[in-house]
Image (cartoon, rainbow, N blue to C red; front, side):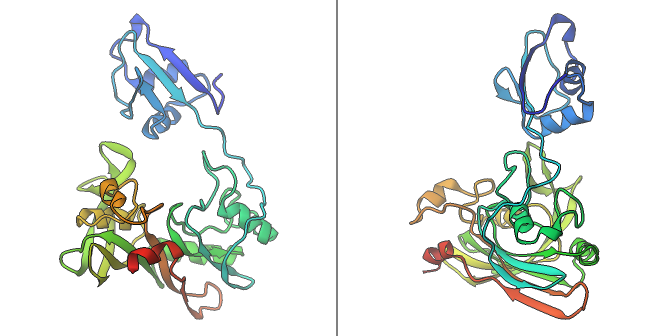
Length: 308
């Protein structure tokens, strides 16, 4: 039986001719369903003859060498870790914090420890199990290299309300600050389209005409130049939404490894170490008292050289 955490290699025999990759591998990997195999292929964990292959319907041929990397399992229960947190507000129901760039929100393959969830469990042991074991208290997330404001639920009541409101964006206003290459034209506007998996790179998102979800970003140029400062207010929370939308305007976010322009990044001094995207302001109603709340996270130090 195949175990998680293994790297496996198979050679297609003569009778494997013209069979789908996902179907053929599922027959070889005892204990793995075809859907699990498809997920690994789409996640980029498959190679055919040394080249990455993320098409589940790819037809194998006799002699093809198939390599499959099975990620290690994520622990069922994240463990508390003493990691400092920049907490802006806390009461018996919620925690509002300023997440630094580089901190992963919750454990996942490749990041099984050292995450925000591990830090929260150390700071607030009673958080364990709120909203689920794997992601206790987490009602929304930021990319690893995006800094700024996050709110965490400490009770089931707060979790239910916040999860619903972040999903619908009711009573929620999220404002980001982005540093982009060039200046958008027009200088302010509303982007409304669909975002879904990129058809040719399943690790990325893209503006698509079908098989996507509506994504809405309202942007405004605060200062223009070789590097411009852009305010983005989002009405939806799609994966990589602001990064995809800014790139679609021809003004990718400075330092964005997935959607940016590495050549342009290298011309800056200093060269950016991460994507220059910051969850700047958050306005919402308290999930229990319904009191209006407003928070602002100071600009991170690595933004300042580009603002000058």
